[in-house]
Length: 418
Image 1 (cartoon, rainbow, N blue to C red):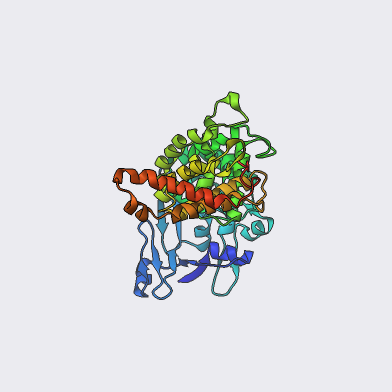
Image 2 (image 1 turned 90 degrees about the horizontal axis):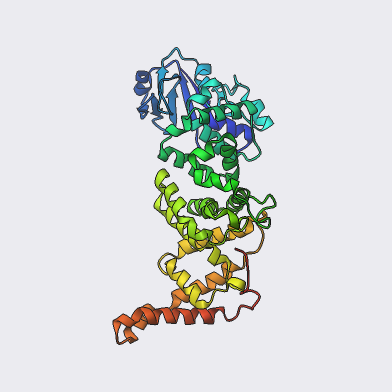
C-alpha cells in the first residue's frame, strides 16, 4: 500500500499559496485494509475514508467510466491494481493532476507544473467533456487564478459540452455551489467571462448573459456595454472584500436593463422597476438562499435611489425616510450597510475605479442613524390615539433626518452617480 498527496495541495504548494487542506490517494489497498488501520469510511459512490487522527480524506485509487448523462452518470472502479497514473488521468485539469509521495518526488504525468508556470488552465484528457461540473470548476479556477488563460483546445471542449446539452443536467444546487464559490474568489469577473466565452452563461444564468447584448452609456463603461460594466462592478466588489449576499446583489443589480425598451438605449430609465421579475426567476431556478435573494431584491429596487441624494432627482428627507422604511433599516442595519456597499461598488465600477470616493455612504449612514435614533416607544406613550402613532413616528423620523443632514453642504447633497 502506497499513499500520495494529490490535487490542490500540490498545486498550491508549487504556486507558493497557503495550503488549507490535503487529499490523499491510496494505491494497492482495499477498503478492508484501511478499516483495519482505523480509517472511517465516508464515501457513498466510491471508497473515501477519514484518517483516524488527522481526519484528512484518503481515497482509494480509482478509474471512472461514463454511463449516463450529467455528473452522476459514472461508474467507478476501485481496486488494488489501479495505478496512481490511472487515478490522475481521470482528473479535470493538468494543474490538479499532480501527486507527491513520501519521498517528496513530484509525479506529474500530464505536465501540470509546466501549465502552472505558463498560467494555463488545460484539461487532462478527452474525458473532460463527460462531466459538466468540470466546466463550472474551470470557470471557478479562472476566478481564483485571475492571470490564468484557458487553453484553446480546452475552450473548444467546453463549447462542445454546452452544445451537447451536458450543462442542462446540472442540478440547481450544484450550479449555485460553484457560482457562489466563484463569486467569493479574488477575480469573480473572470468566472463570468469564461462561462460566456464557452456559451454556458446563456444556459446557466440567461438573465445575466442578456446584459452583454445591451448597450450602455459610455460613462458607465468605455465599451458601451452593460455586461462589461457588470464585470467591473464584480471586480470592485471583490476588491472591497464584500460578502456573498453583497456580491450576488452586485451580479444581479442591473438585470432590469435587459428589459428596457430598445428605443431608450443606451439609457435605462426605470430599469430598477423591471429587474425584480428576472431576479425572482433566477433565484427560484437556482434555489438562491434567502439572505442573498433579499439583499439582491433590495439592491435592484433601491440602488438608483441610494446614489441620487439630490440634483435633478432630488431626494427630500421625506423621500429618504420612505426608502429607509422600505429597507427596514431599524431592524436590519447590517443589511442596509451591505446595500450601501453594493451601491458603492456599482458607482466605482463604472470605469473600474475602486478607490473613487462614494460620499453617498456617509450621507445615508447619517440619515439612517438619525432615523433609528427616533424613540418609537416614547412617541407611542405621548399619542392619545393609537392609530396616529405611525403618522407621528414617520413625521418624527423626517424631522430627525432633516436635522441630521443640515451640516452637509449643498454640493454634497446634489450628487448624481446612479
